[in-house]
Image 1: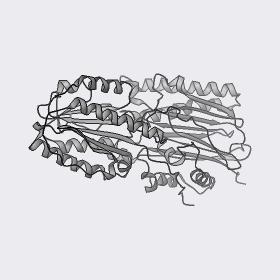
Image 2: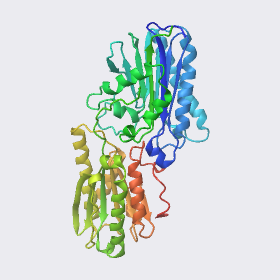
Image 3: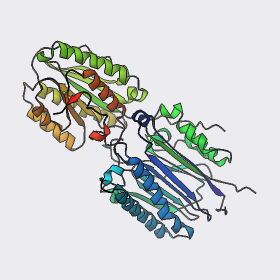
Image 4: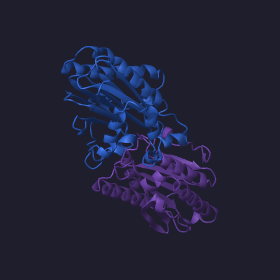
Length: 256
Length: 215
């Protein structure tokens, strides 16, 4: 892999069925996909299918696959800020169209899912978000920043969120493109995990959680199985019965 | 290096649920016995789930000889199933108003304390029809459901007037015989899934066909 400024991206990700879904014998309705390009660009897609929807796992899998498929070719050359925004918006449209097609004769709402699409180029950090979930960035000094949107409505119920299939998806989507600014780590999770990692009072990423994870992924011997095992652990399942997805990426020094 | 990060200590999100239970004279004998057994089974079942124990706040209101708040909100882990007796008329209208008001106050309390919330439930069981003025209560339920402030379930037992129930809420069930135990197992299973998105749609809830009659 070619160098990306300060290092090379290493990404580990896992999606694990929640205990509630185990009781129901439903499949895991979370999905994720990642890609690191030769030019050092990083792409991450994470989706959380709606628990009550019959084909939600198909919706989540389709959303991450189509999202990444649409974005990847565009990232092989340098992008300006407005191009980055445009490609993210288009990828949302591509996902909506793909879900509609996949639905066939069923209502597209059967495939309801949230979606987080993240790109990190040498110059830009781009995020498109529909629904809940959390994206946390880590700077070289170790400081953490919440990049995803925070629910502002005081009357919001946590078991209700907006989906890619919702009529007001496009107007409600959160889009952020800004200079990469030396970003050295990024973590994306669905809301099953964000309850354990983001402080509810002030929406601050909890260093006790994230520092450990970024350190973990920087070590070449760490594996996705360990990440999966962690998401299946008692500590996690005592605190959430939701499906859990966690994708962590960190820059590490290239091996000589 | 083992992966065991620390977790942030966030307070549990809460779901407020009020049970409105008909204890009018017509429930005496086998029906109230079966309801009491159902409540015991519900307590045992819900308390097996560590998340429900902490997240579900339960209150119980009976309506028969007057409307009585016999259990103010308590986390499900602290619930002790009451033993109910049956007598009197059926002041359902007043019971519904009481239940809805309790939910509204509880929701405000959660907001004041910055607690995340699931959409609250009112779960009513009756074997008859109201003996008091109930239409204003029905309009209130419809209005609250329309703005998605709560979810209202009405379960009819025996010779319950299902038409009245259907003019209060779309979520009605007719209990087969006295299968209260199965009903409360279903309620417990539903509450354990309370974090499923858009709870309240039929697809989100466990199958009720084993203990309900077609309406």
